[in-house]
Length: 383
Ligand code: CA
Image (tube, rainbow, N blue to C red; front, side, top):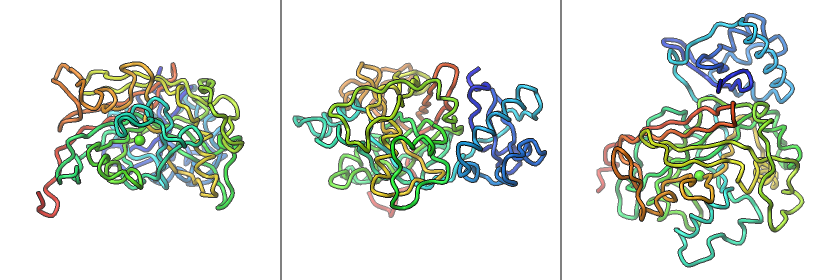
């Protein structure tokens, strides 16, 4: 079972006519965590920790509380002692109030592919890429849960209009937890795992025409900030521990604050489905920079990481054809369109549905789906 006892991801659901509630997923059902806590079944937790509409209070508790909760939930479910809510009777909500959102650029293959397309004729990797995990601060307020429709964004392409190059980015994200670090006190690589609550799939929707015109010199802005979709379910780190593998070798050796500590690549098979056809298959284990390295880098200047922050990997692409994590790469910037049963595609058209899936053998990550809506009415009457 993809969502069996070895998984037990956390989320927030709203049953028909009911208020949102924190939940854990078991198969095709959810269990109301606040109801379990109120019934005295989770006595190790502070009262009311699951009473709100987001998981943030639980995320602040740290690994000891998460482990204990996971063990108790497994006992309760194995014994059949919980009321199961069918998922089709409930609506998934955003599981956390996202504090900060950082997006990295950690795939060597993706950075190389994009470098070739955005800076033709130049060295595809900029000199900093192998020395630090390149990233930028994204827009936390427009992180949305799987299933949320995505309106085609307006912008300067450079002529003004709805984006004509709406793309997807297949990414893996960490949701942080625990007490966090104090301002001015970086998180070492070796301690990063204590700050990782769990993992989600991320679709970093990208308007390539807006992005291409605006990104120099300060990086991605409106071409990315209109929406970022994440899984409704956060798979805890504990569920993915058996799927940690060695990351690719790094050359040159990173500075000491970035030096790897243990095997932190994740053997997670990933795929992109577009209108019912799988158009890309890849694996997260090839990411050049690991999540502990990303977290150590994001805080090395003393910036804080707090419970409920989202750190996404950046697009995950493999080396082979058909393993790229975005349409701009899959279609070679439109030169080789995808031939799908419903018609040819370079970028997304209105009504298109994209589903991202990921699984480490028997542990599935919650899927991320989204359907593109036509652009809204003309902003400011402009043409
Ligand atoms: Ca991205």
